[in-house]
Amino acid sequence: MPAKIRAVFLKQSGELLEDERVGGHWRAAVKVAAKIANAHRKLNELHVSGLTVVIGAGNIARGNTLKAQGLADKYADAIGRWGTIGNAMVLVGALEAAKVPVEVLITANMQYQDPKFSFDSYSPQKVLAAHRRGKIVVIAGGTGEDNVTTDNAVAFYAKDFRKVFDGEIAVLKGTKYDGVYDKDPAKNKDAKKYPTISAKFMRDNYEQFKVVDKRSLDQLIDGDLTMLIYSEPLHPLEKVLALKDYQIGTLVTPD
Image 1 (tube, rainbow, N blue to C red):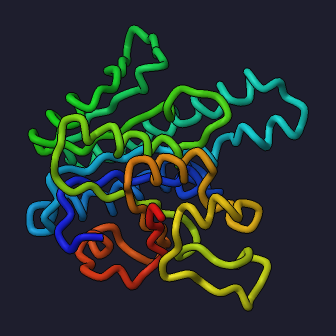
Image 2 (cartoon, rainbow, N blue to C red; image 1 turned 30 degrees about the vertical axis):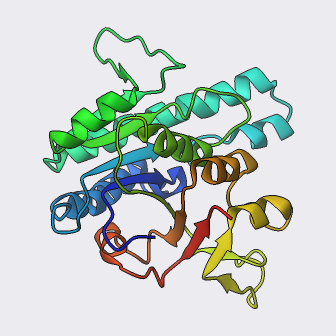
């Protein structure tokens, strides 16, 4: 990954917007927003022209889990998408409270109607315009498709951004674990971390590596993109953006 990143697309884990205490959703969002705010203040010195956040919904619902429990596919997938909208609202609210300029967009495949609140529909042109105005962009709704995750969405939007942007693009995935391991680190103390790994290798051995779904890996390969998977609790966003050689986490390369 280049030392000077110009545009960054961050997959924000929904699980990190979860807190069991009273008011937990808001408390967690405030913490995440503070990390983004700290990075936003340093974007120029970090050589970042703009930051786009694609929000997940693991704290609210996971389509595959609901399906396994017997819920019809069309409802399970829809609940997952709407969960990202709820998370987008609370994160944007926390960013606004932290005085961070932010613009929220929804996938062009979805609509949200509320007389008191509206989302603008996504386009790469709108993302670029918001970046140029110094705004953080938050995208809700994933890609609006069934049977795919928001990991796929962040890779899709990064690839789509190339339509309007000819600079360098980085994809980041902040999660609980600091990278990709040969087995589940939560269950195996001897799990070994990969400093780098190819998306093609992960796709070909998918049952071993389910950190990123297959569609997401295809997006990285097709878009010639790299994705850095790192621990958000361990590594503040501005520190991740400042790295030159990316010793933390795991760098997923196209091939």
